[in-house]
Image 1: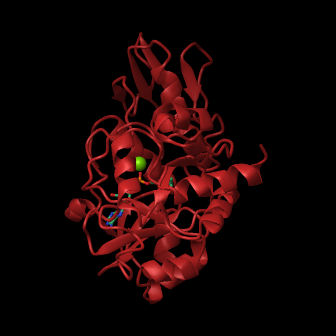
Image 2: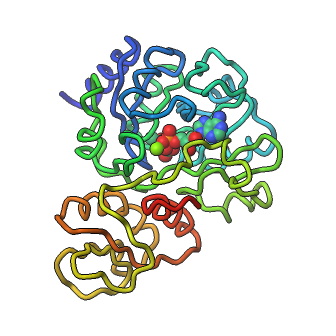
Length: 308
Ligand code: TXA
Ligand code: MG
């Protein structure tokens, strides 16, 4: 079956209210028709996700997004600069039926993003409306960045699965709320500095954590305990290194050259590999907290069970 046929089948499955594993440039998603409450309920069930944690509506383009959400000047500026791509905007809802109450967790706001992966884009155009697509992991686990990891996590619940290769970015989209002052709800693939250039300083989510209920303790977590800012591993620990590291067993180097984009792309896949290695725990080298490092460290703190 070629890609076009696979996409046509996936679109038909979505129209019938079924779930589809979908590649994006950030992580794999588990997609459903955003307007179909039964399909959306099946997504929450497949992930074991609490229904008070709202989902992102994925769209093919800005025009579709503007039917769902109300864009002010700032939102337009960000969408025009970063879409299609790894930025999610939380905005006042315009059409509450297009993204059902359950998908929005009953809020009068909606999260929207136009993904950059060509397969995701083609599927969205073929389907013709918004798709919710949370990361395809079971709730609390690391997001899948490779096709087989997605299948392992939630493949059983999906009617179809599209193989788009390894995710280029490997970290989820940045989530920015534009309700009052611009607020960074989740650091991600688009870094803070690039957004602040267009909309000014971003307030933190901490004060308002309930607005991004995805921010729970031990999120993105492997089974083994995770120890951060480790200079060397203890005896039975696996080690995620960054920069130069001595070659030895149970070491995965996120980026030998110290490149944050490379480290982001490897992060979840290496956490999974270390988790399967038979070690007693996972130690992780310090990662610089600049640029993409903000999002990497956010995911690592959650993997270790510290809420940021
Ligand atoms: O990169 C991504 O965004 C991936 C790919 C598959 O597109 N999707 C993803 O979805 O990470 P999910 O469901 O795992 O994360 C959605 C985040 C959660 O932290 C959720 O709380 C937040 O977006 N969110 C969604 N709707 C919201 C709303 N109305 N207000 C505040 N936060 C919202
Ligand atoms: Mg997720």
